[in-house]
Image 1 (spheres, helix red, strand yellow):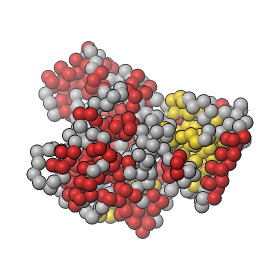
Image 2: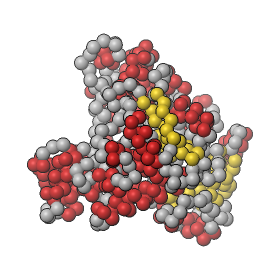
Image 3: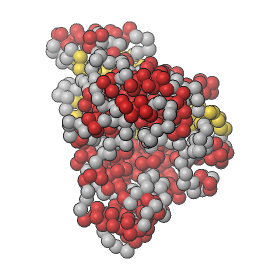
Image 4: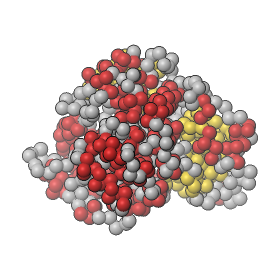
Length: 597
């Protein structure tokens, strides 16, 4: 498991030098850690370095280090990207630009520590945000890290962080947070594409998804489809070139099937094994589609039943994170780890991110975007008809909403919706702080058309990188569809181009029509696991009841105890709560047990 820790301090302060030496000694004593950068006032350590997969790219002259996996943009569409060494000129440009050239000339999964000629230090998280990046301050030393448990092992027991209740409430209401605060007081996150100055504590966004989406591409849909296919292929093959053997989580949906086509036996030398999970339920068994996709790609398919015996109390032992873990998405983590070990696979590829990337939103938004970008011209009726098919509503309804948004944009639509959670109390649903406090700064200033705004909002929040249950035993998670060049391309393509024809993912379906089985290319249904999640909850009712009825959220009046008791009574009830939300509350309660009250 690749991780890093950086220590920054004022070298003119003897007390800070002593404290930084103490922290560094703790890392040196731990097995597997190595020093990758030493500068006056800055030391960086890493563990889990593996050639081609995750490394330390030194800026020549010891002016900094880039941790993770780098690809050159110039090599994106020419060949599979080999591992690289930063030349002296590249190193100088990176340092002199404060990391901006990394954002412009490279892509990948990385965090960079950069020192200037004057001795100032900064940290840059790549625009995909794939590698976590947090920081806290202890005894005057700034600690930058990817895995919280590594830092907690260095701190005395009385220095454990406390719960940031405002941020935790925002996490419950809105899901993943989009700003610097985490659910732990004193622990902050560096955002994707952001440079953080270690001395001053100030930050600058070097990459803006909002700015990219504000310059829509004027290319034809045919040219856009060709470009989209090329970039998906290039990014997927680049990630595959890092590994000898990988697992591909293949549901049989459009996104994972596209990845399977990119990873077909005739397109990459990497050995690829497809994995499909199924369970009982009306939409939980997609093996038919997965078999079609695997067969067309010439790859073997491993079929496994979802773990019906998953014990929810495992969440009490998950790794400590700066925010609660949505463990429902990790219920197959043990099977993933065992399959990876059995087949010596170093990574698990997934199609995560495809919904917002390729625009799978059943809404009238593309028609409004068309009016905002192109105005009322001869193309609007077709755009309105497409949006009507997409949203399954009348063209008159779509036109009315689109014109209303064009003439007077409704800021309320752009506001993050509170999760439809009937188990929360009015106190929880009405926080005492403004919503903007936990909104991504880019979204607050956005003037994008409504559809583009919503797409960007979903793409600005990185997906979890580490497996909180299996930790070191887990294969590395790789989400090729969230690669920086691909995200930038799809942000530039107008929503009405991405959905031309009136179907979600319309453009990418057209781009890969020759690669996908027709039943998948035209598929409109989408698999789920709601019934499986409910079955797991019912099998763990005593534990679930004890966590939610006697937990901290109930004591603080954030959870409606009466409704929870009705829902978890195993008797008929009129309460229509989403089972995933129930699991998320249990995850919050389990997370709270790990921190000082």
